[in-house]
Image 1 (cartoon, rainbow, N blue to C red):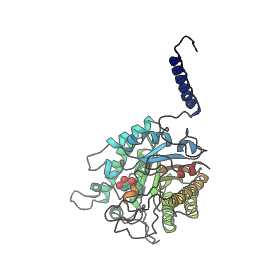
Image 2 (cartoon, rainbow, N blue to C red):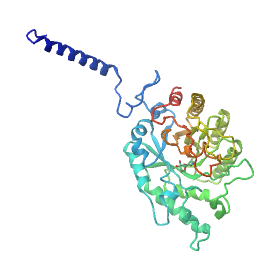
Image 3 (cartoon, helix red, strand yellow):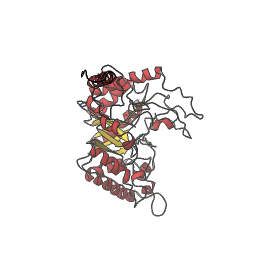
Length: 396
Ligand code: XIL
């Protein structure tokens, strides 16, 4: 230190140097965080913050998430860091993308596809035929009555060709038909009673949709997508339909298990049995809409009529959810040869589609008016932070 400097000035320099040393030491010691993960605290000692779900599962399957044109903006950093597949939560559904015969709403779907391409994320298409969020015009004839089978087939073909052609080479896989099987516990009722079933007087619309899809994009993987697929009665119905489609030479590649699950469903045996059946037919599997509500409802329970009391995300419910998530992923990893992707339905617990269903999941009776009961069903909490369940699934 220069002894000719005034004494006070020397003291200041010593102080500044000490502060600089502390700051530099801190910068050396702390891990280099990219902006997207700097907000994720290192809550567990074994956490490797440089990795996302897609990296933890890189030798197993793709890890995807359902997105909308809003979440690709608000949650973009998290999506890019954690996932390598996306599904449009609503924006490619027939009634949304093709609301009238001569109107296509491409904007949101295009935005999602552009976002995914920009970040080298795979894209699943959802979906080409469903009784919900359906384009009702497709089923109405020029006289205002139910359209003929021939007219519906023509419109279905046009729809499938137009949408699949637009995203050819970009969307690698499509849910061609969604939820065509009856959800009841009655084994004798095979197909869901919809206008599609009525107009075709049978399940021929399923075959037709797959054949059109294959013609439109022979390279795309084509899936049948369903919920409650692990419940014994429905499982057998799905198995029967898959055997029939295969026997009839219908171009189908795989089955999507929606996986709207809960703390006590499915059991390990239910899940394994359902997976084994599909795999035995030489079909691929994807888990397409995974979430795990903390509000299990008994099968067939009526919808609540008054808003349920919200217990919140209690430590007890959290522990059960962590255990269930772990059990499920341990099983899924064991099927990595057959499971091509596992997709979560929504990004964080801040906004799950389940929240407005009065605590029910897919297949549960829906309350007449939406009742908010937060389901906390995902791996990221309301602030986008990794939950304990996250670490439970990534740590083998
Ligand atoms: C849900 C969306 O998440 C909601 O935003 C929408 O209001 C209704 O549809 N099975 C499916 C999905 O195949 O398309 C559904 O998505 C959830 C159940």
